[in-house]
Image (tube, rainbow, N blue to C red; front, side, top):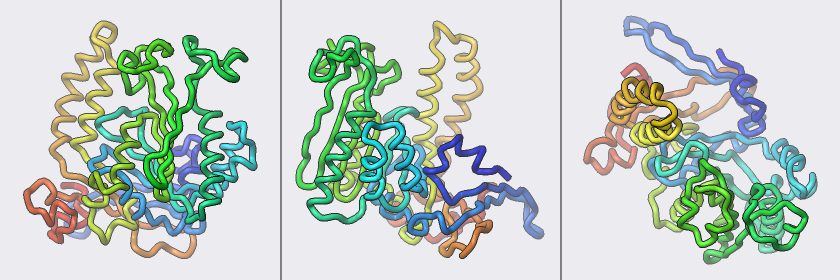
Length: 351
């Protein structure tokens, strides 16, 4: 049993309602012993009963990993008010407009330090949307960015703290995107390919991006993931929901694509172990880690779900593991995650 205090590292405002996780290994009657997973849930702290269906409909398909976060937006607003110049009122102007759980996803095309975050925005009129855009733009400009020694002086840059400017653009009706380049050795884009390369302080940079679109708030240090999410919302890119069984969408809290996860981890491990600096560890990684990752890549996608009905008070609930083996075949119906074969049923963790 693991308390959420040890899992959250102080960030439990972003997944309130989960007090602990439990893992049991025991025999099931005459069958072989297997693992069972449970979560200690506090239903009163779960936003909208932790229904994640809208999130999976907005996120791009084939993630390395995706998880739904039952965020406490009021508490998160308190944290934002402490780190942003907008203060408590400005932070509340953002947090009060967010609803339901959030989601965070990693993709093989990007890096471990640049996932994409998605949250739902409450239904609003034009005036409310305009006020939210103003608050988001100011907050993004305040908290995103680092000192850029080569950045051109402009505006308040004369004070000595230079940053590249924030660009704002409208991408059609109801879509607003903010972006600021931030120099970083671990950035996801090459500085040499940027039109503003002379102002960057490193060989790479993060195109940090925030978008407000069609009732969703989207953020990532990697603009490509925001663009993909916008493409999903515009019906130009397949959604994660297209690969999950429809009846499981509301209760799915985590999904993994082993092939994508293996590719991401292998590339990240290689980047963290340069041949000229970490020859011994790099060789050990190639010998022991890489073969296991290649084996992992052949596993079917897996998703975790909660029961359809949660308890009325704090209590343990089972977490079911679903291995969607049928997706590896050519059956279109199975690929959509709607197969009803034994291979698509829970309780096969040991396979």
